[in-house]
Each structure stands twice: as C-alpha cells, then as structure tokens.
Length: 263
Ligand SMILES: O=C(O)CCC(=O)C(=O)O
Image (cartoon, rainbow, N blue to C red; front, side, top):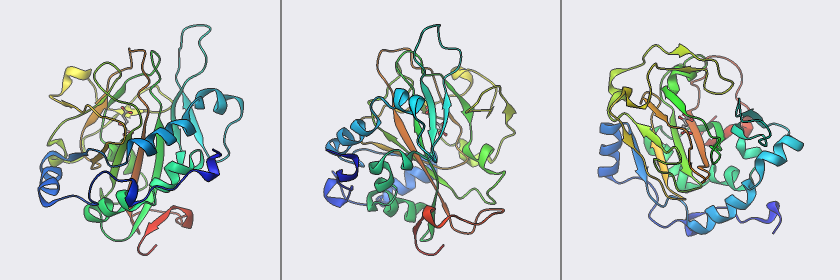
C-alpha cells in the first residue's frame, strides 16, 4: 500500500469513546498527566509502524524536506546512524499528520486547552534499541517559554512500540506542575539542550508503561524525563504538542498548523 493511500484515522479506528471523562479530567488536573489507553487502534499503529520503519537509513540517505532531525551522538564505531528525534514528523508520515487532525486527538485537546487550537509541533522520538539515549528531567515550558506567552500547551505522547523500564519509557513526577516553572540548565546536546540536574533517582517518579496506541497527555509544567534504551527493542513514540491560538510571542502562525476553531 502506498503512503498516500493509507487510511486516515477516524472515530471508527478508536477503541473507546472520544474525549476524557470527568474523572479522567480530575486525574489530569491532580497529576499533571493522564494516560489514555487505546487512543488509536492497534491496526492503525501497525500501519504507522510501516511508515516509520527504516526511517534512520531513509532520512540519512535523503532527508525529507521540512523535517528537522537530530542524531544520536557518540555511537560505537561502525554503528549505523540513529535518529534521536525528528521534528515536524507530520511531513514524514501521513498517518501522523492525520492523527493531528483527528477527533480522537482534538476532542481531548479542546477539553484541556479550548476551542482554538494549532499544532505547535509534532516530533518522532525514535529511541532506538541499544542506542537510544536518556532524556534529562525537564518541563516542556522550560523550552517553550522563549516563544510562547502562557503555559497553556498540552503534549500527547503516542506509543508506537511497547514502552517499559528496559527500553526507556517516560517517567512523570506526579503533581510537579503545581510548583510552576523551574530554572533549567544548559546541556551539551543537539536535541535536549536544557534540563534539570540529577539522574533518574533525583525525583520520585511514575514510570509510564505504554502499549502501542496509548496516548499520554501532559501539561507544559510537569517535570518528566526518561532513561536510555538498553534493550534490543525500539521504543518509538510521537509527541503532538498543541497550543491555543494567539499565544505566540512573535511571528505569524503558518495556517498549515491550524487544527480547530479560529486561527
Ligand atoms: O522520548 C522521551 O522519552 C521523552 C520525550 C520528552 O520528554 C519530550 O518530548 O518532551
């Protein structure tokens, strides 16, 4: 099947009702995150996996115009290059693009942000078997406050592969969003160049085991991070970050990023 002919995700692909329930919304407010199991069907994730298979070699040979890739650094000699993160993943995968426009995603974003939405960015986190590196503790707004005014963004991490302790599942510091923005330090890295000091034991955290199709929704002030992938299993995920319209400090919003309500 060609990429262009892949079906778009829609409600029929969903394994459960659209949106968050009252108790899920309360959990989100309390914890700063909410794991929505089965946001998309296994069948759709199987199709998405075909779109991202072999992406390391493909992007290395011929980068997709509009995508911005950072690579794993300091790999052992002779190892093939591995993508660490690929920004603007909607240009690489028609299914990711369709997901960013789907009611499965937007119904929840409207509940958490409001009616007027744009896609701030979509990013593939490839965390390759053996070679995927850790993500330092950080708050997303530690990065985003440079170009966004208020911390109104919501991120959704969609699991493409199963994620657990062995392959570097993300960890959330439950309730940390309630303490506001913390000062971040600079790190030597092409991708995660800002973060908080300390290894994985620095904060009491919840390891978020995920299955393909699960979506982890989290706000911009929750402290989170993840360990390296020391296993022989990839831990691929895509993060979709949305914001309310009119929250940018400067610049004109590209209409291609608009997803709901007014620009
Ligand atoms: O890929 C991960 O484990 C972490 C990703 C993350 O923290 C982020 O994109 O903000």
